[in-house]
Image 1 (cartoon, rainbow, N blue to C red):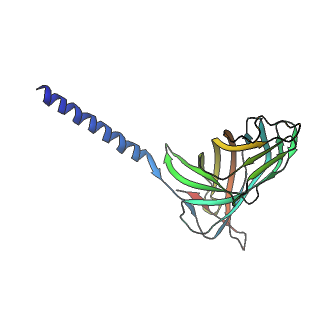
Image 2 (image 1 turned 90 degrees about the vertical axis):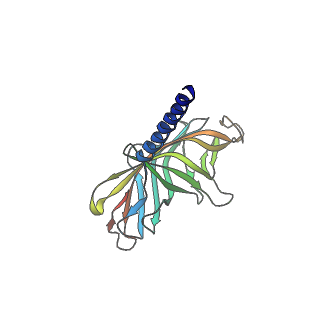
Image 3 (image 1 turned 135 degrees about the vertical axis):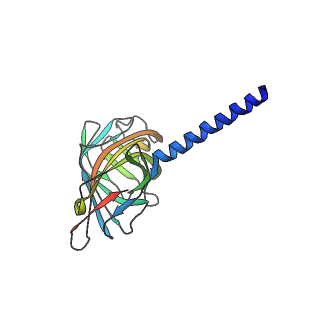
Length: 219
């Protein structure tokens, strides 16, 4: 009798575990990036406050952040855009340029969870190149790295005006600070992995020749 009850208990545990897996799969649905027509030029601009990058030394906040790329196939699992930053203030002291040096962001689709389209982003750089925050008292470099998250995509608009908001909330960002003489860097040439990056962009699509709007969306 005891052996039978034990077997029944194990069967129930297995059944509950399988139900949990099925429920999880049902709630997490894969999606992709889509465009009404390709090729489509993708253009992104800030839509909800500054882009903010935080290191051990402090924060770098940019009033301007733009992105540009091309989607050549639809649907696709990823899109790559080149970032550009302006009017950035570093550590509350300096207005500084950010040089991307050919680095790009590769946004990757993931799953739709509880109604939200969630994914990740990679930083892709040419060999030996880095994104550089060139503050006078502390040069910060950010190199290539993968699977940063989380990124939330939201569809807005209809028809040719369909657009996507991209909300980025990254933790665990790798970077390195380089302190000049009399500089202010907290850590000098010691790789760190506690960086954060928060930003939000509105991405639109358009014909690369006529500049007519193309609907872009996720689904």
